[in-house]
Amino acid sequence: MDAKIFMSVSQLTKYIFLIFILGIILGGILGGLMISKIKNGFKGNKNRFHKNK
Image 1: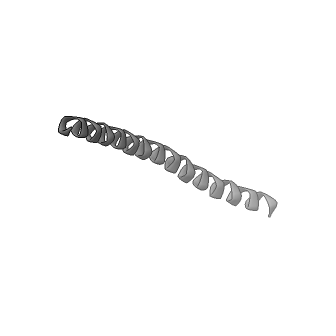
Image 2: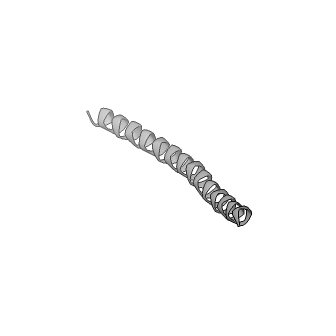
Image 3: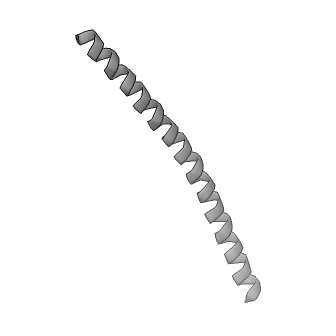
């Protein structure tokens, strides 16, 4: 019984660890894309406003 419980706990911790790492990686990629899009968007808007004026 104890061995089975230990195995299940270790497997759960492994899955949680993998999900945590994947989440950090995906979050970092998405965050980077969002920041770059926002920066590009601001630059683009400034250029558009200057062109319109």
